[in-house]
Image 1 (tube, one colour):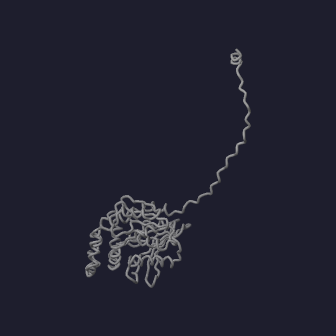
Image 2 (tube, rainbow, N blue to C red):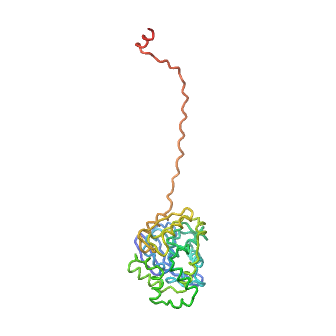
Image 3 (cartoon, rainbow, N blue to C red):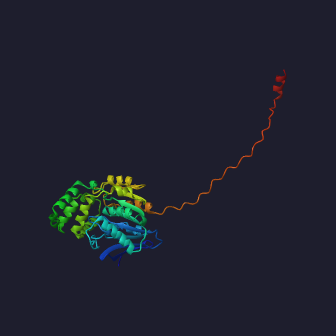
Length: 325
């Protein structure tokens, strides 16, 4: 266990490893120094990301919630799944991780393909999710860039091409330049862009390719309509990998979902605009204010019945004389 950062009166962030189904799983854990408002699990995206992508928002989230940010299997420092990587496999990994850590119910926040996993998890295990936040989820294949669909369709037809994408600059060119990811990283700092490049080199080709092929046929329309937990859908206004219009449409499918857009951000809003990301997420996750019992309205008093008296109208002396005349 290694310490990442400690903020006074905030939270302590540590790096931990556990074994799940015989495979090593790495995660970052933030524990609030004060009273915690519950548990929160963060799920990172797909190409070039792992739990590091939450480093700008983890301290503030950790100051409020017991926060867990795992490296999904095959990403970062976690070993791959025993079976072929899939959305279902990642969903079951999240369930096993929560069970292993003794976390029964929690808030679930996912970005990109992590949001796809979160959406699937909330549908399959709604009793475990307090509130759901999804940013830029890949929920419908037709929303992916045309070149992405063409490239992965080609890889499916000619599997030998997989061996031609080694862990070299060619891999960076393939995933970043040819799949529209380059334009979705233009707001990143040099440090974050460099880290993203390292993660792309680290992820096994099979993990990137197998999940990519599954995304070619994904359609979570029916799942979205069956979500029963409070949900916030959000995205960057300049997202390219999954356009913000697709996320907006998803928010209309999920019953009662809230919608927020992060201005001047792409597909990696949590890294590009962490303050705006938190400004959208924190109010949504915060506990509902306790409503004080309203006093019953006071019943109006029943007016006592008035006794009508025959009122005799007095005439002025002048009018009386005129009447006599």
